Image (tube, rainbow, N blue to C red; front, side, top):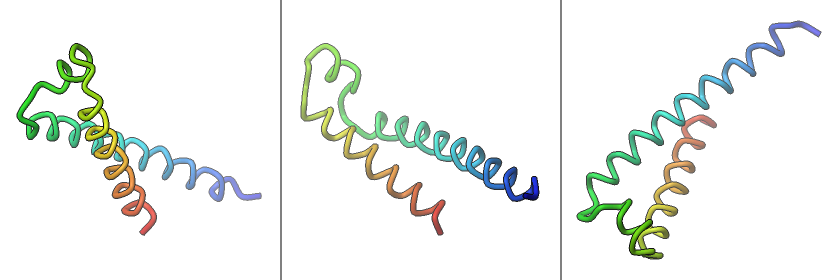
Length: 72
């Protein structure tokens, strides 16, 4: 088996993982700025489940978008 056939997919997986994480981090900072309240305070101090659901839906949506962009 040729080494290139093994190395190229591993390198691509690492590159796409890093790009995906960077996009996720940037998106999370954007959503924290867009929301009219402090996300940390609402989640940690006030135990606001609704904010947790909003953040979770954002994470799932962003993961879907990144996955489809990588797949194409």
